[in-house]
Structures are given as structure tokens and as C-alpha cells.
Length: 439
Image (cartoon, rainbow, N blue to C red; front, top):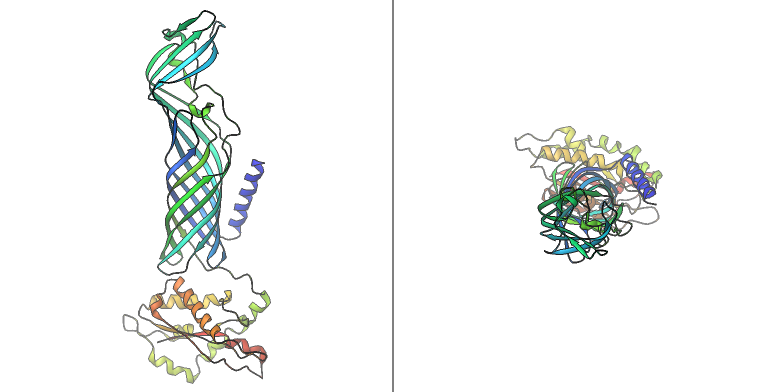
């Protein structure tokens, strides 16, 4: 089952990546990262760890997206035992005699380090805003352990054997594995199973430049599945008949004293992303959305008529004192057409016009604009004038999302619908528009 889940997750990640993620990012997480498990007569604590990965966000809607990618992480847990903690295991010596192996520690400390590959599948929500946006991620992560190493130290380790057939205790034969060792160290490794965890994160996203964001916040991953299929029953150390110096550790993590380990991590996260763009609108019929495309160039020709040349006399000046050019003025005054009756979402084909307006306003920092929304008077029923207000505010939000200060825009709407064109009813969609003009 686990290999199938892993294969499906990897395929899903590849498909989403090839589909064209709108934000590609690098993420660094740091905090307490490890495994939580109970330890009889002892204590296990999370240790500092870190993760580094690449991810991408596929926009589902304007403020919603799906985040996935691949991450490499270091997870650390430390286990300690009280002084004079003793263990007893049945063993057989090199002569074939059975005995009870007694192990006692002072200052026992064990550190488990796990390297893992993590694949997140998170839904993301973020607010609108030019300066800072609040975001929240929520979903799941699939955890694939690659290697788990265990480092063990003890201030003192005492090893003795009780032979019940002879009622004899042997505690001072170092060459045969019985005696006391000071400053003892050893290492070993173990295997963990893949697991799943719930994951959440929240914080603020800051626009650094066009299309570049810095996310800063906090995160938590809470494991749902155990990383071991069953409880181990290994002895804390393995008896060595060739001497105390050859005694090898298995660690308390591999004994029956340790409960089932599950992932737990929390801390701070930083994410730098590129290519942030607005979401695609998937609810609009494709045929209707293409109608305005054939006529978007016609209003540009009307911008050169003598009646509109009066506006060019009152062009705003740039900081250097030079007015905006004729081509920039024509670009700004191109109408944003809403192709469907009642539509307030900006059609995808119209966003290129607004991107050009953003570029011009960035080149002229003192330029202010008015944004006016309009509605149409259809042959059957007139649109509500408040739709003009909603359309104007949608355009203003788009510009603000791209980094244009809201204080540089005056937003209004025409309270009366424009009359339908009896001679060309199909052209009435042009009245469902937003006009932008310099102040």
C-alpha cells in the first residue's frame, strides 16, 4: 500500500508541475523537528532540525491555490534515562552457558537523527493587498525516511552476568564482556516506515518586486501514522564475549520500552517565490469569453478621434517633468470589457491591458488615474448600476495586487446604464466596461 501511495504522490507532483505552476519557490523551515514517542522510565524530547525544499503553487482561484513540491528534512530526537537505570536480558556466553545479562547506566543520552524526503499537498489561501498579505496553508505531508542513525553516550556503563545454574554473579571480567566502562560511546542505525502527517502554516507574504514574494510565518506538522510497524524487542546493548570494548548499542529507541514513534515538528518558515500571477477564471463559458477579443482593438482607434484629443492636453507629468507619451495615453485609455451580463470578474484576455497600465504607472510614480465602471441596458433587462461599482473595484484590486498604491486611484461608477445599440445588439457588451484615464 505504501509504495502505491508514494508512486501516486510523485506522479501527482510531476503532473501539477508540468501543468504550469504559477508560483515557484524555495522554502526553509527551522524549529523543533523529531519524533514523539513514550519512553518507559525515561524521557524523549524534540531537538532542533531544519528542512529545505522547492515547491510550487498552482492557482485554483484568485485567493486559493494548491501547494506541492519536494523537501529534504533533518529530524532529531533525544532520549535520556535516569541514573542507575537497569536492564536485564537472557543471554548465552561463548561456552554455551545461559545467564542473565544485567546492564546499568549513569548519564545515559541517546540522539536519533533521521533524514527524510517530504512531499506536501497543501491548500493555500491568501488575502489581497499590495504591501502585505496574510496566508494560511493546510493539508497533509507524506514522510519518506531515508536514513536513521542513533548516537549513544553514557558517563558510566556497568555490565554483569548472573548464572542461575551456579548461583554466580560475574562483574569483573572485562575480557569476557563483564565490567565497568566510563565515557562510553556507540552508534547504530534503524529503519523507519513512511508515514503521513497533518500540516498547517500561517504568516504574512510581502511583495518584494513584481512577481516576487517573501512568505514569513510559522508551521506545524503532526504525525498521524506510526513510523514503525511493530514494537522492537532488541536489548539496549548487545553482549560481546570478546570484551567490553566491543559492546555495541541498539539504543532504547529499539527496545520494548519505547512506544510507537510519530512525526512532530513546529517552528518558523521562510519561502521565496517567483511568478505570482492572478488566478484563472474557470467558471465562464469559453465561447462567451472569446467574443470581446475580436473587438478589443476597435476602442483604440476611437482614442485618436478629435473629441478625445482634448484629454491629451492635460496629461500628468512624470517626476522629470515630461508628460506621458501618446502611445502611453492610448494604452491607459483602452477599455476593460466584461463579456457576460452580470460579470464582475476580470476576463483573462483583458489582464494584458491592465499589466500595461501597471508598467506605465511604475514608470510615472506621480501619475494618478480615475477608474470608472459602467453597465449596459440590455434589450430584455438593464444591469444593476452597482455592477459598475463592482467592476471598477475589481480593476482597482488587480492593480493594487500588482503593486500600485490604492491612493493613486479614484474609483467611481456610472449610475445610469448605457443604452443598447438597436442597430447592433450583439455589440452591446462594449457597454459592460471599465474606463481608466489619467487625472
